[in-house]
Length: 112
Image (tube, rainbow, N blue to C red; front, side):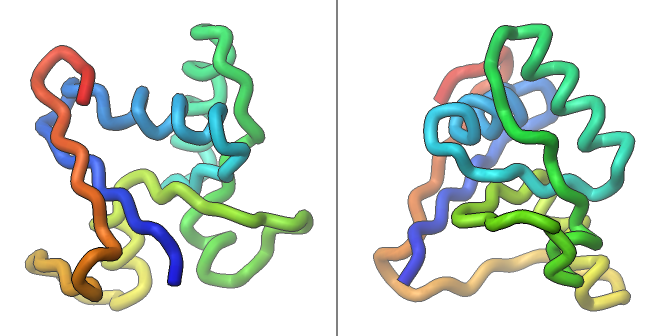
């Protein structure tokens, strides 16, 4: 079974930076809700000198339309992905097998 990491925190707390850093360290791909957000994250990583592959969209993820081998995926904005999968409002909630999730809580201003 895969390893799940949930990064939780308010806006501006460093969640996206954590995602970019993890992608750079592991070679994982980032999945964003749309192409403009993919571009924004890619530019942010490049400006910080953190090399990552150009992210894929949630739509690409749903369709399996990567055009390349993807061994690990980091999802930016899981709520948006769930809404696109369900095509309905998602109120929230998580259910995972015990022992498979690690929660990283970011405080305002960054860090874990």
